[in-house]
Structure formats: structure tokens, C-alpha cells
Image (cartoon, rainbow, N blue to C red; front, side, top):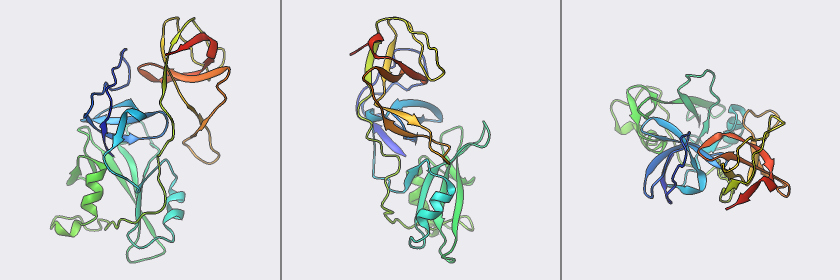
Length: 249
């Protein structure tokens, strides 16, 4: 999804985040959690979610929902209604990151599913002869593909219908920076180790496993004694730590 940076963000340490400058255009691949997975010219890293803004409303993007859930949402929707969701990778080099689910035009009982891939240059496609710089462009073109004589046979015809969902929206608040006053060595697998002086990003919500879902939900937590966060510049290194070991900046 097309987005733009609304605030500068400087990465202090080498890690898996992008440095942002106001106006920088990026594509968002996954907008769940405090940090969004983003793409710039085929390279994937994380960005703080509240530092970027989607260019337009995307009611068709529902994030991490399962295939069956997509079918249930579209079951009573008008023909041509659609949604896009994140796909669970089936193998490490799986390039099909998204799924497109469409209410069949000719058979009202069927919801058709298509896979959307992202190539090494950051282009998105369902059919290899037609590639787009963003999901937004892909959706726009397939909303009126008959204007192109090279439209693939069987290409979906998308109709924009507000399904009443806003997938991927997160009232996460602004992630809070902190600095470690003392070293902390984790004793549990869900804790975060760090040294004195380490810069830490404190999260407002924590991932909570959901029964029957591969992707966790994010919920607020009691932060009176323990905080949850990640090392600055390293979103994958995250966990709980004692509140008294850090100073909120």
C-alpha cells in the first residue's frame, strides 16, 4: 500500500529499520503492530507505524485474516466485491505475499482467490506479463482491465464496495523511546536482554496469540512494573523487561 513518511526518523544503529525523511514514499507490506514492514525498491525493512501515513483509504486491505474468514466476509457481498489480505508464507523464498479474494461475477456461491507476488524490484503481480509499482496500482488496473487488449484471460473484475471493515488499523499510540539505566539479562524466553545505555523502543501493545489464527492480535497490557519493547534499530529483538531498569525519554 502506498504511504509517505510524515516525520523524520533516524536509525541510530545498524539493524532492520529504514531511516525516514519527510515525504519519502514507501510501500507498506504489513501494518500490524507498532512497526510496519515496508518496501523501498525491493528492499524490506521496518518503519515505526506512526511515522508514516497511507496515501489513500484502503478499505479493501484487511491484513492478517485467514482464507475462510475472507470467504465469510464476501459471502453476502455484491458480485465483484473484493479484499486483499496478507498470506502466510509456505516456504522461506515464497514471493506470494498477498491474497486477493473476489466474489465471482457469474457464480454467486463462489469466492475466487488469487495470489499476489512481489518481485526483487518491488513490483507486484498476479500474471507475470502485468506488473505494478504498488498494490494500489494493481487494484486500480483490475478495476477496469477490459480497457487493455492484453488483459489476461480470467483476470478478475474488481468492484469497489465498502465491506464495513478497516483491516490493519491500529490505535497503537506513539512508541516511546527509553534508555537503559542498568544491564538486564533475560531469564524467560519472552524477555529482552540489554546493556546499560542501550536505546529501547517501548511498545504500547503486546502480541497475543489467537486460537485458530497464525497471526497474533495486539492488545494493551499492564505496564506498571514491566514494559515491552525492542532494541532500537532491531524490531526483531523484543520482549519484556523491568520498568525500573530504564528511563523513559
